[in-house]
Length: 107
Image 1 (cartoon, one colour):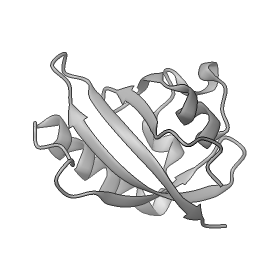
Image 2 (cartoon, helix red, strand yellow):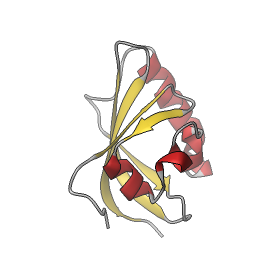
Image 3 (tube, one colour):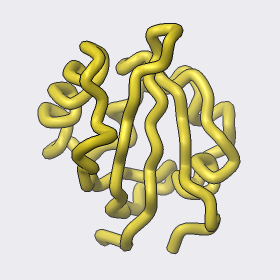
């Protein structure tokens, strides 16, 4: 269950996480130091990594995912997995802001 009523939001450069809000840290079950500068793909199950790389590339190219929400599985710091809807948008500074909205536990 999502421990927060607020969406999880983090900023990244398509490779590493730069910042995360309190809701992101709660949802992923991580302390800030466990998220910042960590590879984004470490939070994605291996089966979804190629698709995630492609979607990150298209977002980086300025297309974003605000029009088509995507559903992904994510891995928490404790290894548990949850499904969430994801939207991403490029920021003016070249980074990407991703919003993760919890849906349900996977396993």
